[in-house]
Image (cartoon, rainbow, N blue to C red; front, side, top):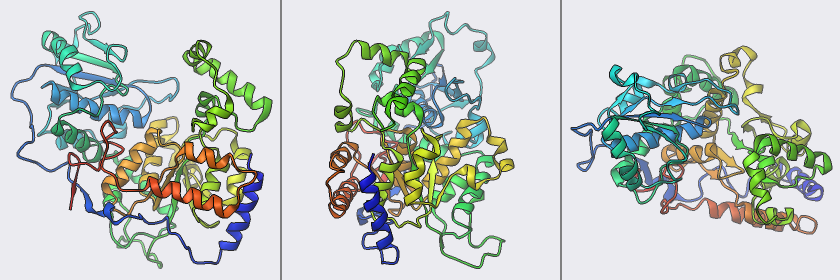
Length: 485
């Protein structure tokens, strides 16, 4: 779609190969970022603590993949505290999309989770015997996503859920996807959500160990001179260290950029956009929509059609691999940059990735870095594989996303903000602005393209306090979650 720009990018990368980097997107551009430090785990005089009386038990069966379930867990912790209830360790629903039978203990350390939150909320592994025999649905205590509005407020839970809880002593949330808003919200419960996400949820040793091995391979066995909070929180006792027993000649670190390229078939099909693949692509994505998105098909039948050009102009189209490569080239990342690619299979496979790898050949994935046997324990467990991507993205020197609405990108960027000490830059494109830039692809000069892309990214890196209604998991820079020096 952008042959001319790709040629200009290729020439620019050749010209810049042996020059010193003029712009450094490897670093956070604003010192203000380092003034915010983690403190959601600290005790305050206003901390709620566990309630003296207990109104009953809350069960949660969370849907979605790893990252949606992570949000559901921490929202459930907040709701349990809000309603003076005991939380039963959350379960994960089996999905025909994710096809992963993993449960909480397969991904997160159960004892650590319960121990970390023991002063804030009652958590048990199972319902007591006298409640196990109840037919939850028959007594009216089954609460689906249809029963609670998206981004519900605390008062909604007090009016709708609390009476049921007090009557039946148990409620079961089924799905629980995005069913708790961010504002207005009591500050201490907001802090509890942060404590859950950034402190209480630690990956099990099996994931930490292979995650550590993955980071070693990416960095070519070169490490940061000082141990970072980010690494320690995610990898625990398996954190790579230059003081470890292995004898490595080189010190310092091998820098890498992690890229979450959200361009899987489901994303491409749902967007209804054109990606330059002609009639074959159009029919293929239409067929996928009919099978996987029947509700979308029905909605489209009853709504005014939006042109392909308008969809792109509005920033509704996911970035293609070639667009992502052009953005990185415009930012001055050199051809030899080591890039870790996170995510599932890219729609279009190697042919779709060719423009990217032509500009940036040093592209690696967990599948190319780990052996068949090393990956074997995770095969057929998509959430556990996603945990490895989470680790690789969160601990990278630079994290670049192509879709800021992605849960993985949101949670990783929040983790980097919280634990990054102001040294974990994240690159967020504004797809609407980027669409306007790409619309001039047949005439725009490379220098102009560079300038406009760089300004767009730099504006997205400004240090901002979390705005009202914004996700605290994605933007933890606020008094409820972080402390400002």
